[in-house]
Length: 243
Image (cartoon, rainbow, N blue to C red; front, side, top):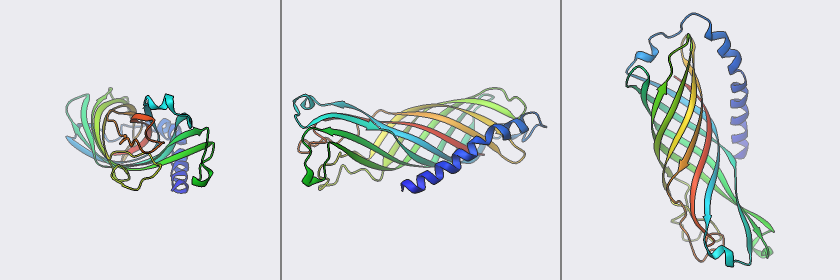
């Protein structure tokens, strides 16, 4: 999976690096797609990359633990694939959603152990990787600036629901693992730029998401789980949207 993610990210990064040249050649040309923003509905596709990690709080049991000294949340890369539906509300406001929004992530918690159990494959630094295959349903309010020739800036704010198909809270034999619930909800905000080309609109977008629900299904019998109380998700994503 990491090989595929790296390939996607390299392709996306190469494409992103060309945006300034593409945009500068279009901004001062004739007005492209003059009626695009006046349509009641328009659609698009999104391809993006993300950096995801967990925010967590320790359980009081952590202070009494003589085995685990430190826990850290590691950032890792993933990809986003989505289908956009945009509804115009007025001159500067739109509502947008992604009825099909797939997010692939790989988050990890790193444990520093004082007494690692070599028989269980533990080391002084042990990493527990958590794969995520998430279906999200965001609802966003979009505020756009005036159009300057073939360029426009916009801001986003909204909320979302998520369902993680890979979450393992229901597994009975998830020994020595962190158990996470499948459902999540949160808020998000972002900024983007429209570049109007003759036959499509290209929009690079940066967005930050904060999970609000405690994802942790705490198990007092698991040493990697019982020292943590609540876990919430954090994601920073960069996407390219074609409308």
